Amino acid sequence: MNKILIIDDDLAICELIKVNLELLGYECAYSVDPIQGFALVKQEMPSLVILDVMMGEVSGYDVAQKIRQTKEISKTPIIMLTALGELNNKLEGFNSGADDYIVKPFEIEELKARVIALLSRAGEEHISLRVKEVLSKGDITLIPESYSVKILDKIAQLTPIEFDILNVLMQHEGSMVSAKALLKEVWGYEDEDDIDTIRVHITHLRAKIDKISSQKNKYIQTIYGGGYRLLANGVEKK
Image (cartoon, rainbow, N blue to C red; front, side, top):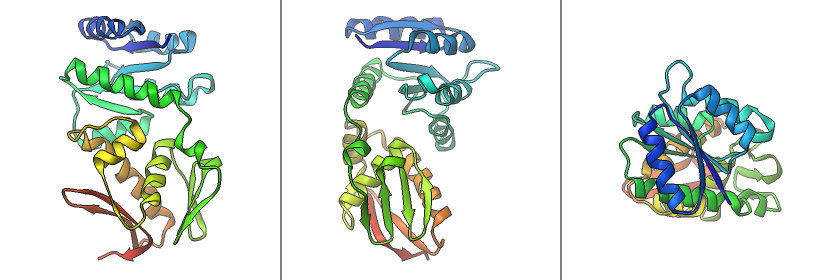
């Protein structure tokens, strides 16, 4: 049985989430203290952590970073809950190690759907592990065993999610991939209202590519109102 650990300093939210996820058949525990919560993650080894951001001196960002830096729990999926919905806040959350990000106030049905999707994704063979061979198109080469991308002669390390996004875009090189399709391929669910999740990861992915490219070429295009398109040979930036 999947065990879910909730870390939030709001007791009412902890109990609300616990009751609803237990109705789905999950085993749940919670902590209203982030330090104790991190200790419980190490002790209980949960299948998923639901983590609030704003918790006094020790933030959810801090806890997420500690989880990612602790070998035995570093791969634990994390959903962050926060009232901070700006793009830079989401970027900080994903940079800290979050796999998904939900803005308060949220509908409990949305949270349940995200939990199911993330646990399903975590239980399946990762996309990057299914890419057995190096994938190369134009200037870009994906290296599965190290979750990295090579642009011409320079290499950048990617997160597994960034690797998956880039892999999906490369599979459809030259064609538009909608945000909805990316959510389905990478996260395992479809939600047309959740474009910020994709936008944050694309922003971070572009930054990494820019660092190892000539800075003159643009490889990932945003198609307004549609999605994203990868051009493996790049186009000159205006």
